[in-house]
Length: 370
Image (tube, rainbow, N blue to C red; front, side):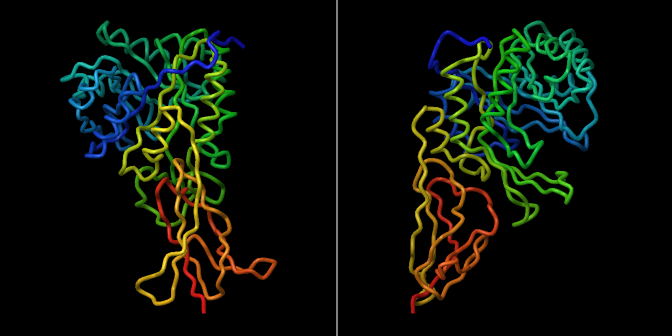
C-alpha cells in the first residue's frame, strides 16, 4: 500500500450543492461554508426517468462571489436506458451553466453497469472529441466498477475521478460504513496510479422495500410519500469522522481530497444539521447527548409531556428505553408503554426512525403522577 509521507495532513474539501430549486436557506449555508472549502460542485442538469430534462435554478451570483472553483454536475437517472453521446452532449450544452456562464469544469454522475464499462470508455472518448479543448471532464465512480478489468483504463479517461463510497445497495449494511469505505479507497489506490477524490455522505434516506428486500421507493429531503412506514438510513457523523482521521493519518498517495454530498441547509430534513456540518468541516470535536425532560402540559392539568432534547452537535439515534416515574402514562409513535422485568413502567422504542437532530425536541409520551 502506498501512502503519502505527510502524516496528519488536512485533506482539501469541496461540497456538492444538490438542490433542484434553490431557496433562501442556501445562501447562509454557502456563506458559512466558504472559508473551509476550495470548491463547489453543483447539480447543473438532470435527465429524469421519464426523459424530462431539468435544469436547477442555480443562483450563479452567490457561487461566483465566493471566488471558489465551480464544477457543473450532470446526472442521468439510473432508471433510464444508458444515454448516447448526443444525449449527454445536449444535456451539457443546453444548460445555463455551460451556455450562459461558461463553466467548463464538468462532472458526469452516471450509474453505468459494471459489465458495460468498455462502452462508457468509448462514450467518454467521443464526448471529449466533441467538446471544446478547454473543458475538463470528470466522472463519479462506484466501488462495484473496480471488479471490471477495464477499471484502470476508465480512470485514465478523466483527470480526477470521484469515488463515491456511500450507497443503498444493501440496506442491512446501511448508507455508509467507515471500514468498508476505507477498504474501497485503498483498493482504488492500488488499482490505479491516477489521482482521485472521495465523496463522503452527510445525508439520510427513507426506503421502502418489498418482503424480499427489493427497494421500490426512496425518499430524500422531504417526507411526503409513505408517512410513518419505511426504513431510515443515515450517515453517522462519528463513522465519517473516523474515516477522515484514518485518511489524514495515512493518506493514500493518489487521494487528492474529500467532496461532501451534500451541503446541509436548514430546510433539508434528511441531512446533518448546520451544527454538525460546521463541526465536521472545521475539524472540531463531535459530541452528542439526549436528555429526557418532563414538561407540564398546559392543555391538560397534572399531565406531563415526556420530551427528548438533543443538546449536542451531532444527531443521535433515539434511546431504546425511557424510564418513567409514574404509572398513568402512554407513549407516542414510535414509543409504546411497557413494563420491564423489574415491574418498572417504561416507554419502549418500537421502531428506529430518523435520528434526533441537534437542538431538536421530540415529545414521545405523557404521564400523570396521581
